[in-house]
Image: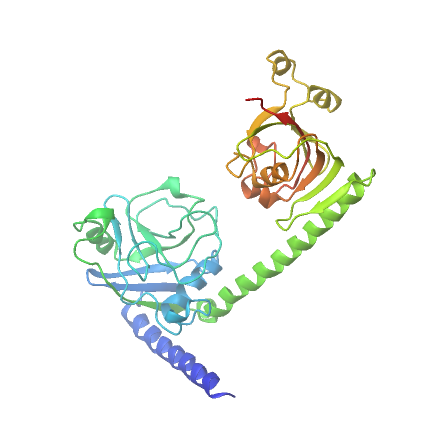
Length: 382
């Protein structure tokens, strides 16, 4: 074994031994705690103890526990083998709402050096004071920051992962929420998290291997990513096979977009200052038409809207011919690869379309690859 490897091994061994001693000490302080996993959060305002839902939200708890104990293998090198939360602060405090901490920079912008996904569980809600939940800046942006509620906050359900709740120290949470704050809801006098200690009671909690559980989460993500990539490549191949009977020019772009030019026009390439007129028809992969600018296409697919036709809305639509065009990325990229008179059938991977959110109230499902027929009819005359 190399010298550096031995050094790393002994550091981890010492951390494990110290964690075991701390666990034993904490168990003695809280004899009434039932079997489970808990976090003792010691602050300069008092101590709170939170039960951690390690069985319902294993990845989130594994993240928190491994950060607290200095065993997380995904952290930035600056935090390797360090008890991440010790010495950090509750940097954002909002009375009658929540207290937020876990940022090593104390600014609200810090992270451990990675992000991971959400774990929403129907039975775990922001339904009372003392709920321990992950802070984030949007879907799948969890890191180290967490918050503890002071009141029910149902508007946060399915947006932030609930992974624990206070069983000791609600009065401490309340006292922290009442401190004087300045700009950005930051306490004028720092509320310091002196240390976070993990308590394991019972076989299941003691068996829970936080670093391994968290590491496995990323391994699984990578496997899922490879599987999705394989499915995407298969979809692209099938798209070309089904839609290139006329042997048109096939253009595979680095972004993942695929274009089959069914007709090459003789028009000029528009300038970034031009607006172009575009005819389109959009389909799901199964051939279901979800929208079109062409009345005849709508009729042929049973989607004709007479009122829309009467209002003169089955017409090419104008769009600026540059990167500012307000279109999904795949549609915009396809447009910018076409000249006036060009016609193309394009394959847009879901991540270049509407992604996980879908669109149209279910008309376009989440994670749907899309197929468009596009034609650059002309430029708008100035």
